[in-house]
Length: 128
Image 1 (cartoon, one colour):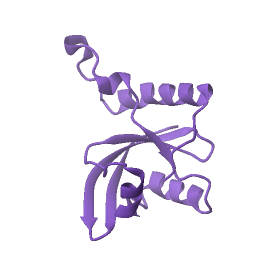
Image 2 (cartoon, rainbow, N blue to C red; image 1 turned 135 degrees about the vertical axis):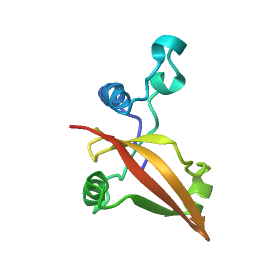
Image 3 (cartoon, rainbow, N blue to C red; image 1 turned 30 degrees about the vertical axis):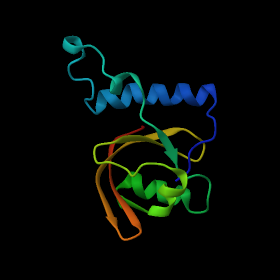
């Protein structure tokens, strides 16, 4: 998984527009009139992509179609970057190779077995 390098203003606007629609379809703003906006409503989740490596568009298509719902990575990937392990319930926005948002994903389960981390993902909302 690659972190996009410094997004442009148009990419940030595209992510915000996607988030505005995705959170509505995912029913993440069910009671704003009573309690006011939450952080989840105001701040989009982190974005990521498979990058431009060979096979990345295929993996993206498989994840969006549901034929793939897990991702695995060595625990050393997390340790070397200082990134925390994924947590069930966390959301992220998946970008295509061009940096456009294509799906809102939820981590449903995380398994750590030996030196491997497996994330089980669910597509919450897919861009049309």
